[in-house]
Image 1: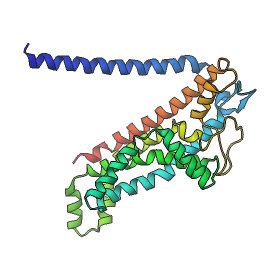
Image 2: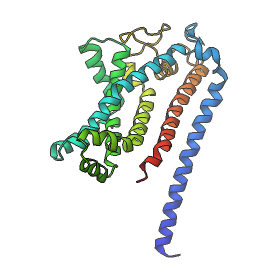
Image 3: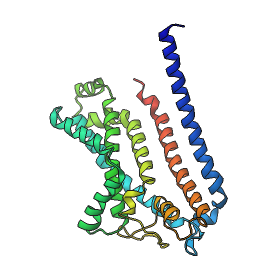
Image 4: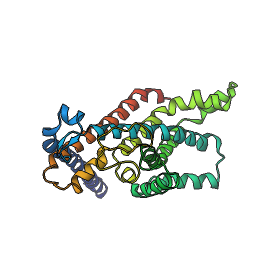
Length: 284
């Protein structure tokens, strides 16, 4: 075996070992949550409020709060993110200014979530006086997700061949008609996949909402956008670090983590299904 082949074999083995290690760690993590949390997950746990100092009962308010925050994040993020990507790709003239904007968006996607949370606290909770509320939390999560949605949508739009645009314009279609009927339909799988993955990340974030939206204990469901709430990520954090008897509530903490993990996995499965559903539309 020559040196080049030996080098290739070594790299392949490194990649194989790395992949297997990651997969084994993932299964170990899943098994840990299932082993420690499955015993407490039942209908009462999913539909009841926390009771007896959060040592009994369920996580229903946290589940509903997570759903509310996720849905509101979608409403605030998707239209703005997709519209921004369309403008940057289809309307903005290429140049230094656009390059700076794209670079800034990429850098913002890597900013730690606690920074978004502190900014959201200062802007929405204090300056705009929304208080600790669903609105403040959803807007803070939107700041976290916007760079991801814009980047994913931009890449999806750039993947559509220019010939699709040129052919439509040559037939007399307007710029917007071309984008709507000839570009977006082929970019849609990438846009939806990136959006769902971003929202799945937001559903599991703790730092932004712990400063803007959630309480340690609030059994009542929010009735307006300016009401605070409980959520699964912060509930898990509080139970694991702030409860007066952490050992006693450890099974409940694992149960809540398992429910959150299943919700995030479900969102990722939806993203995979959507991508597979529209994959044939991208075969040019």
